[in-house]
Amino acid sequence: MNLTRRNFFRLAGAAGAAAAIKEKPAYAWQSKAPPDPYGCLVDLTRCIGCRKCEAACNRVNLLPPPDVSFDDQRVLDEKRRPDERTYTVINRYYSGKTDDRDQLIPTFVKVQCMHCQDPACVSACIVGALSKKENGAVHYDVSKCIGCRYCMVACPFEIPAYDYHNPLTPEVRKCTFCYERISEQGGRPGCAAICPVEAITFGKRSTLLQLAKDRIKKNPAVYTDRIYGEKEAGGTSWLYISAVPFEKTGFIPVPSEPLPKRSESIQHSLFSYLWSPIALYGILGGIMWTSGKKGAGEKQAPGGEK
Image (cartoon, rainbow, N blue to C red; front, side, top):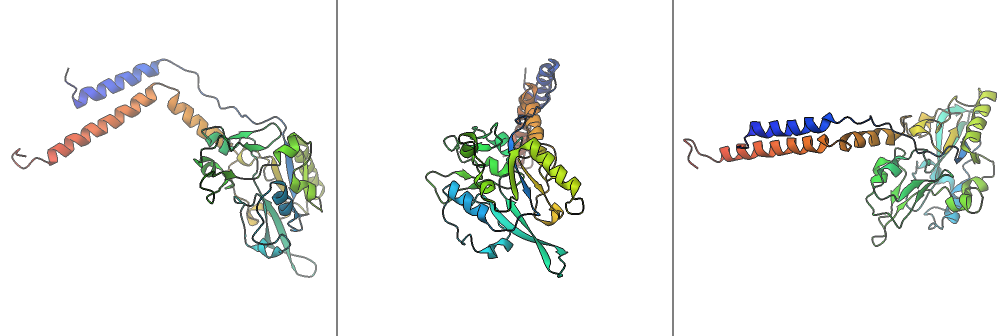
């Protein structure tokens, strides 16, 4: 049988239809989040911007010294982001609120990895270098990392940073949630342990959520009625309460649905059925065949002469 264009598409369509006849159960995404991990509640009404959490993080993780001393608060207005040398930063925002002396009231915001319940970075990592641990940490295994940086693209909070300055052994760097201090020493993250005003509370996520709700309920005139991290990206281990709307203090708006739920469902739908690659290669082959015929026709001169 001559493989004409019409016969080619008939064969591809028949093969795809035959493969699709075999029914398979619909894919149902399931959360891989630990039931009640540890977390931290940050009360932005208490934070004074002292940067002691930055210093503690630097010391615990053996990071290089900062470009600006931790005693210098002028950097608070620069709207910094964590990078490969700094796992957490404090920024200062002014929402327009004033005190009794008509002075602007600042809001200080601590930024670090949110340690999502169902992390997009873990789902995106093709070698398993990132994993969600039972204690709440999104843990990074440098021995497995191949430097693909998919995690950086996947993270809705724009946290993972790549160490471009180390070409021999590059790494993806981010807050570790002081994994060893929690899992092996039974301690608290360095930033939570050092905070002089107890703006950071460490504990089980369920307990922190209840604490946050109680503070909001008892002081409705003080707090906005929202816990950032309760639902964002499916929920995170770091939670925030604030007197100022989060949109005014640099928080990134993210969907409440876990990002892996969407991406993994699409991947499973595309590649769990035999007909998907058949249809794909059939379409691509048809395009190449058509393009080849068209290109050959264009080379011919009028009258059929080449």
